Structures are given as structure tokens and as C-alpha cells.
Length: 89
Image (tube, rainbow, N blue to C red; front, side, top):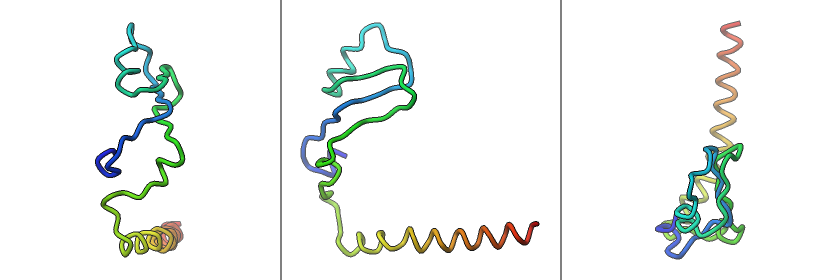
């Protein structure tokens, strides 16, 4: 993500499902934020402003196409899956 933003990106928090190591300071130094272990999920929390920044590799034409494709593709997939389910039943 840092390469795509061309700026420093720092998480606000990091969580891991595995138990804490004896010395968690390397993880805290690496991420530069609070690090939690024994969490229900592995995840990273970022500031909303960071997630809304445009990527340096963005392309307005492709962005528009990608915005339309998932919903139309999803509808086609659901229709196909439904037809297959009815055919099997």
C-alpha cells in the first residue's frame, strides 16, 4: 500500500490471532502503533483519510469501469447460479 500511495501509511492499530510473543516490542516498533494479540481476527485499522486517498496508479477510466462491473457481474452470477440450482433440483 505504501508504494501505491507514495507516502507514509501507518496503521492506528494491529491485531493478531496468535498469542503474544515474550517480547512484543519488535512488532510495536515495526507497526508504530498498539499491537494486540489473541484477537478474534487478524486485522489492521487505518484512518479513514488514509483509505480515501487516491492511488498513484489510479486510472479514471478503469475506476469507472470497475465501479460498474461488480454489480452487473454479480447480478449475472446470481442469475446463472439460480438457473443451475433450479436445473439440479
